[in-house]
Amino acid sequence: MWRKLLFFSMLYFVQGAALAYIVNFQKPYLAANGVSKEALGLFTGLLLIPFIVKVGLGYVSDRFPVGRWGSRKPYMVIGLTLFASAFFATSFVDPGKNFFAYASLVWLASLGLAWFDTCADGWAVDTSAGHEHGSVQASMIAGKSLGLVTMSALFGFLAMRHGFGIIFQLIAGLAAVVLAIVLFVPHSAPVKKSGALVKGWASLLKDYYVFFALFAVVYATASFGTDGLLTLHLSETTGASSVEVGFFGMWRGGGALLGAVLFALLNPRLGNKPTQFLALFMLGLGCGIPLLGWPAPVAALVWGAAWGFQETAFVTLAMRFAEGRWAATLFAGAMIFSNIGNSLGEGLGAPLVPRIGFEGVFLMFAALAWMSAAFIPKIYKPLKD
Image (cartoon, helix red, strand yellow):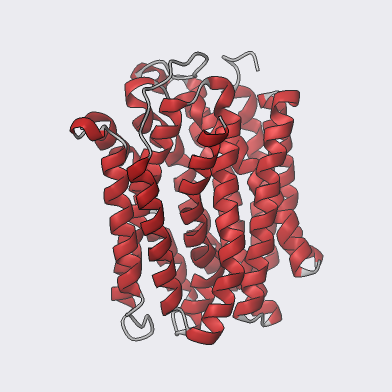
């Protein structure tokens, strides 16, 4: 079991490295190069489109296996190659002079990462029994958080001394390492599961699935909208340097790692539904942390724990909607709604700041987080947990 958890944590480490740049540095970096807040919101929203259409990428993985390589590994290789190549090319582009070229390359990197992520999720669903879901998802969040922690501080120093080009090249190099890991690890046969919410395509029309979809959009709008705005708030309200932003991301990633581990410990004891209510309560409180004036490391650590706990709770729930031959498609279909919310949160957050201020935006996201709890009883209605 520990080998499986280590494998998935390594797969998601590179995603954490990419997030270390996207979440912590991209908005301040582009703003410093003259990109407007409106353009930032639009670009960040468009950047999430590949993750919104992951269901199509999952269908390709499920439907078209490639000989002895199977249905996961070939497409993970394609996704990682596209991701690494696009980020490497971005290191030679000045976004202030050619924002379209920068945006196009980063969008292609996002597409590659989404394809890799979709197949990695399918691999996890294929090879994990129901009682392993929480641990597997916690290992994924932990690996992503560890990448975020270690790379955030490093990126801050590198940006100050050498500029951002070397950061893009380092991310591309990490993707190449993960590519080698994928090539050498065999994909085992799918595990038969019980207790999944979705037994076939007709199940997607059930009312509990509709409530799940609504829940995913609302919670993710609050969660990712807050997460994507924190470093911009920090840089504009305190004048934080790139190094300070990097340390903020490091503490935030450490909190997410703590939240994922805490979920893995509490979920078996409390049960799925009570743990999800606790996760949303923590998320709502976390959305208001920037308003408390806490020291940046403390605020980042507490927010990261709330975010990591809720995100692990959600993806564990999403695994209940996937099994069998169409694992990647069904899981991507479940996750597509949170990615829509992610896009809405990113697209709304920065443009609303000039109108209602940072305080108004964070309070709005806190309210959405708590409102989303109303969907939980409906989602768990057909279950005993």
